[in-house]
Length: 521
Ligand code: ME8
Image 1 (cartoon, helix red, strand yellow):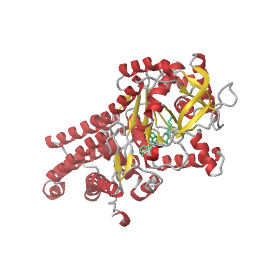
Image 2 (cartoon, rainbow, N blue to C red):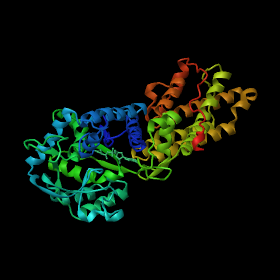
Image 3 (cartoon, rainbow, N blue to C red):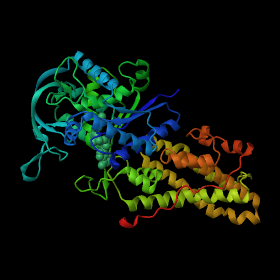
Image 4 (cartoon, rainbow, N blue to C red):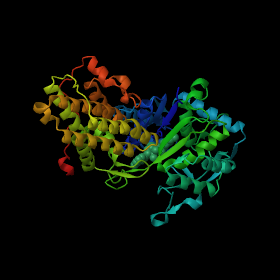
């Protein structure tokens, strides 16, 4: 039995509705989780909402609501987004759940038992927008001499009694971790940022707040709630069974386990510095990898409420299709880099790759079979050129695509896949089965049989990216569930399908040609 895999997104602040950046992260993580399952792994995939902290409390106050009410309302929209985008999460966690409070308090007590917590007084800068403490030396000057965080958000001077975590004590152990596991933080640019930050010296971290009460209560310390990032990070182990389900925990959060956190580049420090330090302190296993993806920009510009360019992912999915949106985001952006989206770019990519190249290949082959063979699966002896095509397609679909997913490179997986789609289109043009119908029907059948197998394999391989279209096509083609895996796609499902007497019905086109909406052309 293979090692279980745990994969997570960040948990989003439900202080507003989800935007396309949230959708991007969850779609990418979903593709990885699906690819892992197709590789036969036992996968635990978690996403959710991060509901405590000052940002939530202040937003709720501004709307004259209780924070819990705001969290309930907005968390619903995040879950709805996930469901609508076909995200195959195993758990949608909300940090206001009692089980999560319990896990956060247990982690706190474990860190305390290790002698890493002490009571003190915090005097320094805090950004509510980032929910982050910053050293004076990190601040930058904004307009009119205002001090801003390194992320460009406002900071306020904060003085309050606080619990501290002895982060400084972990500097050497963290540097050893980064040296021993060069892939702990990816991509390299993010790794370098973290290295510089930790090498620059770590201050102890303020980990409780006393000026508001919307959070997890600090055990045995009235008036203190945990700093929101302490409980937020704990979500990952709550979902893995900490502390009351040791069996589950040893499965999904084991020492040396395959645990990956997919997050955005703005929150790498919390995941690559604070989180492993907390886990070391509590004597718990560490994740294997933190991947900080890039940001999605609207036509090259940062999205912001004030610019009015924050795209609603469900609106985009409604207009262009869920799978078209998923495909665009994963194909267009090299995972790790920033990327840009626009209506034209989505339409262009979906039309060229899905409608024209792949959709057309499937549609013309399958309709031809449905019409000219009455849906009977073609037989016929394969010759060298057919075998060569099938060897190429199998190598791409069974090896290159899963390997690219395995290294969290979805655009490389799609590029490899498109190469195989092109190879099939070149093959169909060269073999011209339509012309063979009258002259050499036997050869025509051999060509169509090769194409049927190739299309089946291409469809299986791309299923993590466009799950609903891929499974609809596989259903139409009669391809059984056990072939829909990376190991199964090369098995002789075609012969079994032929022997079963399966007949193909006229296929339904899956990828309509999209038009750029008139207001955006
Ligand atoms: O940071 N493009 O929540 P969040 C791509 N609650 N990704 C983006 C993005 C964009 N334009 N904007 C945001 C938080 N993200 C914390 C996380 S985890 C224990 C706690 C990403 O709602 C962002 O980088 O601000 C993060 O990974 C995720 O969306 C949630 O952001």
